[in-house]
Amino acid sequence: MVTRLRRERLFGQGKPLSMILAPTRELAIQITKELTFLKHSEREYNVLTVYGGTSLDEQSYQLRRGVDIFVGTCGRVIDHMKRGNFDFSGLKYAVLDEADQMLNLGFKENVEEIMDTIKNAGI
Image 1 (tube, rainbow, N blue to C red):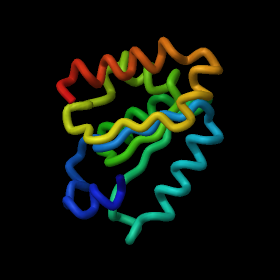
Image 2 (cartoon, rainbow, N blue to C red):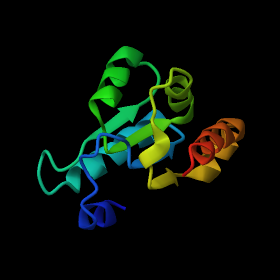
Image 3 (cartoon, rainbow, N blue to C red):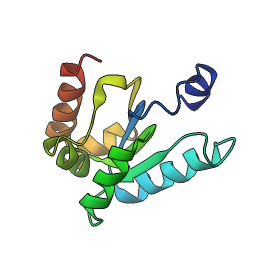
């Protein structure tokens, strides 16, 4: 995903290009660390991790400033969707990391709501 976005020079458009859903905060943080490791330079692309227990306002501010990739847990992604903080119109990738675990944890409806929102955005 990162290689393809890099090759197509899509980073820096101000809208999320990729969304990665994770079942837990710990996995979301781990994914973000790996994405940061893949950067060719500090400013190549912006990654934001959204999960509960942290400030919605700070995350909202970062989303308004523009992110290329966001990683999040289902509940917090839905929180931001309901606030109108996500613009899915430029989304190229939606990744469900450990989708089986999300289903086992009872997040089926949340995942469906998120994916329906993306689909309705014309992606």
